[in-house]
Image (cartoon, rainbow, N blue to C red; front, side, top):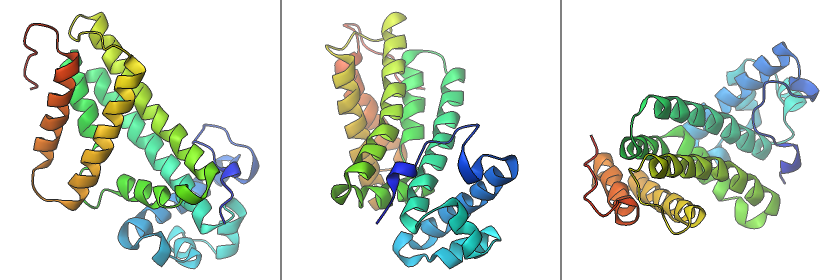
Amino acid sequence: MTEPVRITAPAPRRRGPASTENGQRSRDRVLLAAVELITEAGIDQVRLAEIARRAGMSTGQLMYYFTSKEHILLEALAWRDHQDLERTRAALAKATGGWRQLEVLIGHYLPGSPSDPSWILWLEAWARAPHNREVSKFLEDLLQLWCDEIAAVVTRGVQEGTFAPPADVDEFTLRFAALLDGLAMRLRQMHRPSRKRFIELALVTARAELAPDEAAPAAD
């Protein structure tokens, strides 16, 4: 059984075993090894000893930082998701205009390939959520960070006059995130339509609600 109470999003300073610089590096080695192994074989086929070996430490050392394999899974997801969000924010900062920013966000949200490590971690964690409220809440909190990014892009687009204001930004954000999740599931399982086509489908849906009376410009 997992101990999700101990799971937190990555932070510059942590209490406990990973509170020192060396401890943080050791913890990150475990998370990197876990991401690689889970991507290759799935969490159920990975043993703690394998994660420890790839991280260059003993199982006992690994257990100093994590309580179980499921604990590692959820911490690895938070660790990887934090990196994905930082990359997305950096890309958004370089994009100009609401439609271009929305296209960039969609591109970073959707899996890059069927073997995208982030989405494999999400799927592994989602499979455990129905039977664990704390895991479910943990995943909701991670997803909310992405919803906040969607809402921020929409708000900026409205302020600059590119988007028509949706009836309710929060409801639009929830619907749009659900749409992207659904497209992501199909994209992981299908080679056609192409990833580019899935991005276009998401933009078409957004234009139906966000485009002002005049025609919205096509995405670059």
